[in-house]
Length: 407
Image (cartoon, rainbow, N blue to C red; front, side):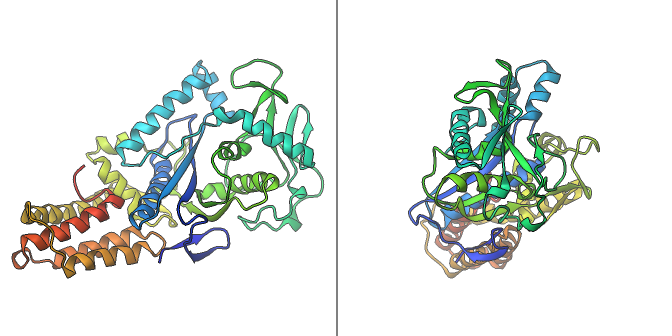
């Protein structure tokens, strides 16, 4: 059975969906004030792999991905470029989707933009104000974590260390992975019409990043999600904020499982503009790697381990992938147009793949196990029908990986 590491509780758990007939997943999407880099893509690819593997094992899956298209950073970037926020974010969303398609990511069933759910954010804020959990201050609305029992449960916060004196944090996000111990902003008040502001029932303003996931989720779920995913950085502040907001207005947990993907480093350092080491997919393409090479490199390392990017590392995984591809091509050539005849080798291939993938999605171990089994097959000793069965199993496996057969 599939076991996943649930951040809520910090342990491996046997996966069971909230609704057996439909696995519901929501994931944090890109903040589109800038272009997504390969570190961002690593997180989205692990989420894509999760969806594909659940479908491979027989589940029906419905996934949403929330796009952050209105925030402090987007306003600042648009101002610097002398364009509207919408023009900036529309361009970056288009580029993101184009690259995601090229990397073989399935389009989520829902791709809500934060800017499309301002009214939902307002409704949530009104409910929180009525409950006394949120309050107005200086034209903004803030959330008081001390009013919520169990705040910080995902991260494992010790609320005894939370300051009793009121401190307010009014930015959407803050640099670094750290906790801002105080009240966080839900609504940025505006003095009137301006780019990135809306006229609403609570006046002119815009929802903060902290409430955007909650506002985009509201129309799509009326029960706990089976899985919520995001990058490791979201464990600081963001996901616990979303939990506190939604569980304060709904009488059930936000999600049963929480999965978090870890960082991608570049030559041992975290990517940053100041270091000038941000890497994009086209840089790898210019170096001669295909999108399949990029996808495989970003998936091969386990999602809960930091992955280090360097060109040699991509070359190594690409060579490994192409070796297996050559074996698969020879297998299909031997099969020709023959009808599949089930064989123990095909069953074994499916077995070793599932064994490793059921262990918290260990892609690298699963791929290596498949490679070992393929190397044991002597084409001269099997029939075309048996080769067809093995190739069919391999095709099914590759519906998850998208790394073996040419696309």
